[in-house]
Image (tube, rainbow over all chains, first blue to last red):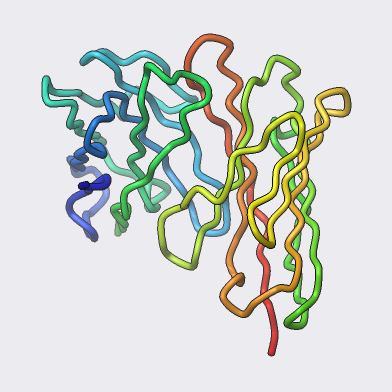
Length: 115
Length: 111
């Protein structure tokens, strides 16, 4: 049973560049959420995708965008990178049908460093 | 004030000790609650869901007090392998999923 997979595991970019992170949800899951986790802090919600649409969004600027594909996989795009975007980016999947009682299952994360 | 707050930590305890973590949440419409464990530079992993009646899983006991908007996690007979950051997670979605994470409390179990 495949868990949540993310790629790449590490990435180094310079300010102003653009980055795309990828996520495949756990088998059987249909909802994908993205989180940003800075060092020493809890994960911060970026947005959530279900049925190929952004269903909810956290307090992140429009530089952060995403997409969900028909196979439920998802991408997170960040434009015009800032030094402050350096963080661990976590993808989590869950099952919409279970709604509020369905816990999140996380991938290993992508560690992004912006120089 | 943050929506989900936790004991600031870190907690340094000897092996075999009992340790309790506290968490409070501000959104009274929150519907479901979880504890996650996160090892250094790894992803969070579900430790246990928290039910209104309280629940236990081996050495771990979780309690929920909706009136006080308070969640707790008790770890008995601490092991070295329990060393990690413990994240309190609240789903405030009344119809769906809207998870909010606390900042986490770091635990170090010492030999």
